[in-house]
Length: 223
Image (cartoon, rainbow, N blue to C red; front, top):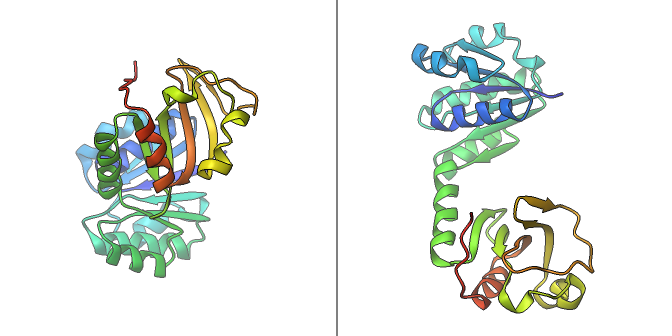
């Protein structure tokens, strides 16, 4: 089982730490704020009050023993850089950092971050996609051209199979999973018949996905 350390427990960091713990992982959360640590202490495996700009304090935690470090500090660039550098020097296998803008992201990548996320920007993109298309329920942008999207099965597809629809040939998209009610099929068979109200989890080019979404004008809400 992987061990995670979340450095900085603001709204984003706390959400990541508590979710990872709920998923059954070992999670240590650190922050310089006493109240913040008190609020999260019973929701993670370990929690500690640590000034992440204090190199010795970070090293004393045995940072190198963790498989993944999530540097969830966006506003304090100095602290973000310091934590990333130390995590890299101590041999953490994977370092994921939060950033506010592209400049901060470039710096973090140069000093050792394996992945940089933009929570505020990414959420804005997801909300925008949900607002402009009634039957796109969720949207994760992989890069400027490709996304993973949850989309309501278009009316014209109901009763047909994935083979019938020839989605790869017609739209250059792949169906990763099908959600029907509370069940989810992560390995849909080519001959599976699509049902009304089912949710398709698809990956493909943004333009092609938008074309599919526009085919169905019915608004189907999550229950």
